[in-house]
Length: 380
Ligand SMILES: [Fe+2]
Ligand SMILES: [Fe+2]
Image 1 (cartoon, helix red, strand yellow):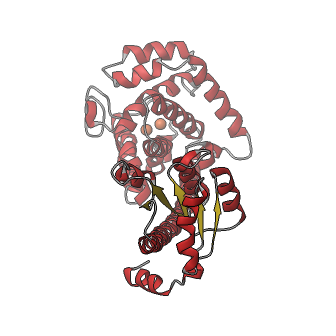
Image 2 (tube, helix red, strand yellow):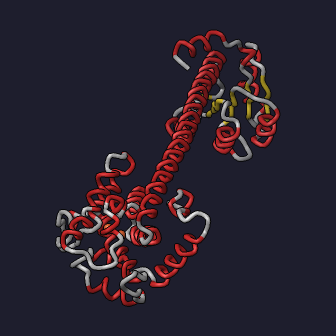
Image 3 (cartoon, protein in one colour):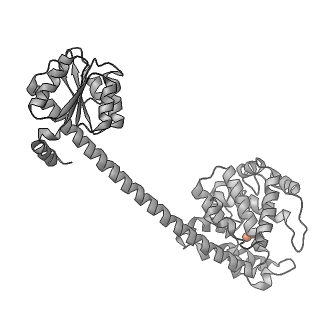
């Protein structure tokens, strides 16, 4: 409500529109409070204690409650509390014995709109009642306006959340398409990408990564080998060891993958993981020879997950080793190939977790939707 509106309200409000409730034990005081108001056309009721006051308040609305500070029952401040929580449109005015002993500041803090000293001067009483009602009216209008605004903000945030969810789902559908394209080229990658993604997710959670970091790591891990799409079949599927030149071409898959996805806005951060997924903590990796914290955290996590998977899966030229052997190798390479902090997170998790993920991915691959885990409902 603007000041103009308040002034309008002040001028326009007839006494008949302001009903009062006088709550005083002594009939004489009740009369001192109620009579001047009734004489000027204010409708109202009177009662002797707080219980009767609450009953009357429940029956009909009052614009103002005038309460003797010594009222029996739950007391004047107890009644004030009830009025504030259950009848917030009602202004609360207190009738006090002596101005000197009444703690005005404490009463205002408690929510009293105004006070009058007994016996109140009729004109003062009317002026204070009017002002208390008007101020309460303005406060309530502001409160209602604020809660309307809050509701609008809440609705907008909800709409935004839904739109964001929709975009994320679309993004992840795109990832599936990219992953599927790679699977067509390289059969071995399918299960590998899913397993390392799941391993990365567990490691990242153990390292207390935020949910945004988890999404970046999951997307980067899933797409880490996407650049293999650009590697010729003769090299990609060669059953024998690669020559030096062939290895150079194979190693280019990190840059090809990076260039493929880095311009897609939601894949900017995952692209950095793709580019760095063959780096080593000691700086002896490729393509840039980054070391330590220069390597994105997602790529440092990925390095452990990748070795874990590389060692524990069957390949055409090598049988899988047990998880315990892979574990020992990861410990041995801590500080060399791997970030010791990631190794620490790895060791904090039980071996059965990795085994169960491997089995889960295998059964999901045989199921109707091998990419179920990248969907937002998978809890990312
Ligand atoms: Fe890989
Ligand atoms: Fe790779």
